[in-house]
Image (cartoon, rainbow, N blue to C red; front, side, top):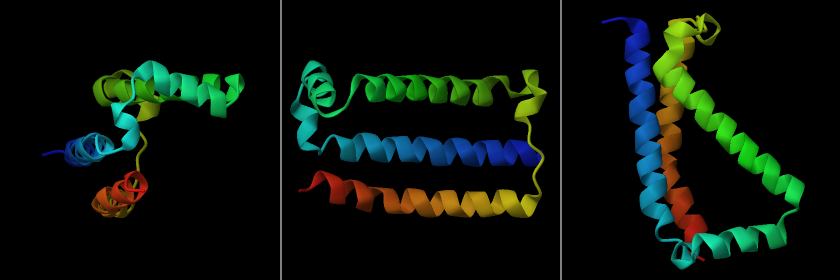
Length: 112
């Protein structure tokens, strides 16, 4: 098994686990019962239009970047950053530790 493939699998597992935690604990939020229109209207009341536009653009760029990295890495050699294995394993350990703390942080935020 290739070392890059191993870290790719770790990345997918950690990323999917984090998204599952956010989905499960996000449903406990009091805002979950509001409609999307109400949430957008509430966000525009508290944020400026420029801030909302930048948040939307950043979200879209992050999604496009994630999809490009996951599925089209061989087509873009500049996406392949050669790092020593020690740095990669440190990243795996830090990611696992952050996913482990995610439910606690989400519960603290959603339970007022």
